[in-house]
Length: 285
Image (tube, rainbow, N blue to C red; front, side):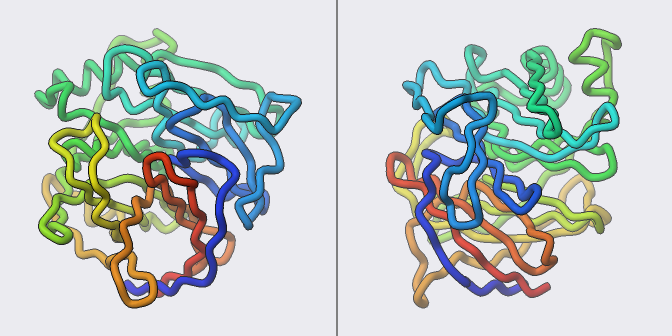
């Protein structure tokens, strides 16, 4: 896989953490705000969903819902956006939002029982839990835990039946994703998008930090890909460093989405306090 940078733009949305391509625009979520926003393909804010203004209210780190991941799903005969909190603390960060894109109807769920069940089954400590990416393929939902680079798979309908208290259990699978280091620092998955053919496109970033709660010096980011048929208990991915002007830039890519053009993508950065950037790229695979 190789990619080519086509263009870059500043984004009006702060701390972009997830992004989906829908109806010619970019739906964006932020890990420092609760609003869901729509931008054009130049990063300009055109709508804040369920708001009469274009104002985005940033929250303190201790108070934010930490919406880190999103994906488009088909649910209840509608196209919907599923947004989830990271679960990195047992307070504030365990909310899921289901947004019906044809009506802006929004439903919220508590993810804590689901997260607790997964952590218990696979013996994951809360300090190693930080869901940063989410993908859906044919009703299969994939939760990417940056803390361990593990992928947890559940059936979409089983999950919602569990969240709506219709069922008390669900079936899940776990896959361990291996990535080499970048400049001597561990890489953690930060964004994912999947296409109709079961190809997953991922961003991963490296920063100098001792845990997944506190930010650290950003080393850089990479882009990697795999197909759903490659999923197994443990597998290793090769990656392409995100290089601009022939050098690795200290950029933390947090989101990726594919456009209607199969080879054209957008990736977005969140450099911890700096303005988010939108990068238009072309991927050859």
